[in-house]
Picture 1 (tube, rainbow, N blue to C red):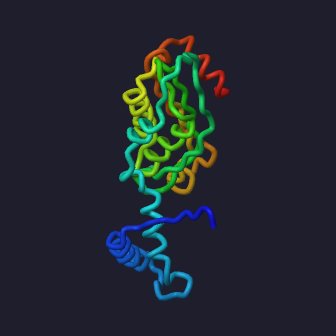
Picture 2: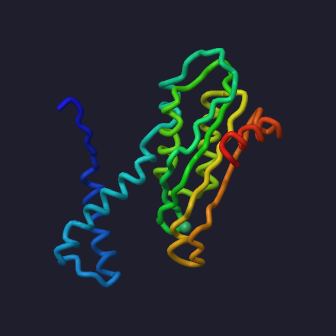
Picture 3: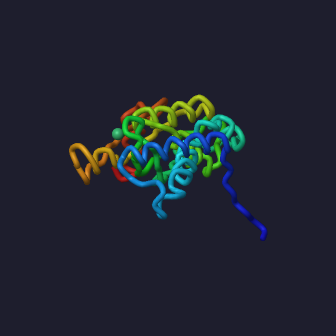
Length: 195
Ligand SMILES: [Zn+2]
């Protein structure tokens, strides 16, 4: 086998969260000794650690690991980046797409790093507004481009499954720095991502 991917979990955290999930599931009226639920607390504990792994990752380091001197100074766009996060108010998923653009200022970044930055910030308890700003600020402060733009479109399970049950509503957030604060540049970007 040439490649093997594996997941690593902190045993102490897994044990602790597993016990708490067991109590939560029982409090909700279920029987944790039922066959289908026997391993659920542990699986849920591992799933939550996976979904919040962003706390232990350094987005600045990821960007800095793939920055290259380059004289290209046109807009670079990565659109339709899949995004999965957890709303910090209900710990329910929100998911959708992120679109990122920047105009280099002597340096470019490996394109695969932009989706990774999205993941690092998305795999935490979030609100969509802050997620947008954190991605924007991280790219702006690290790469120091002439401009950067981030648009996120997401559906929130806490709206779709409970409360107002607006099943088809999509929340859009955006942030712009530098050249993208000019209408002309911003509009070009929005047109290119189909907005
Ligand atoms: Zn929510």
